[in-house]
Image (cartoon, rainbow, N blue to C red; front, side, top):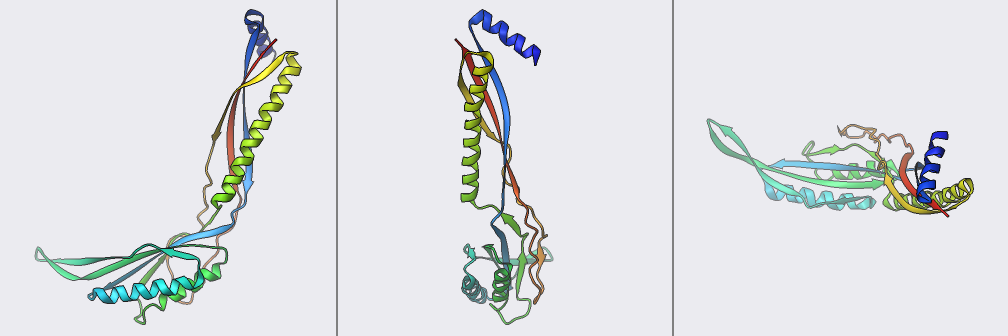
Length: 222
């Protein structure tokens, strides 16, 4: 600390003004508010219209809980190769449902309803992708605002501190704010094939740490 004061004093005596640089970190914990996952449904059949019928029923059944949205489904031809010849073997259709929810029972209901889209056992294959707790965008936006305000208030406070210490007028010359991380949503489950009658395991909820690094420049002089 003595070396820093000496250096600043020398700069002050030569130029009648000096610059102080300062850095700090600001941290907030934010609690996730909902869970999110996606469900991939695949159907294979030689009849393209049959696959379309199953998917239309699946979309209708999934909408009942109001937690999932879906993109358009895709149906592509499948081929087998025998003796270097390509032979048509049927169609494969796929559709992905994205689900955001707070109650895992609702996800179970969605999966049960999907399975009822066809009476043929194992006709519709479901993959439930990893379930994660997530922080909603609005909550993140609010936390970022709070951290930015905290960093700016710190600049004002430190400016006053410098003015008192060196008994000169100091002003804020520059403030740079950099987010050190974005929320890393914890994954508690591996992708899995769900067995009929099983229940969704809810991942453990943990807070997310949001960090900002702030760099300051202050100019002090008479």
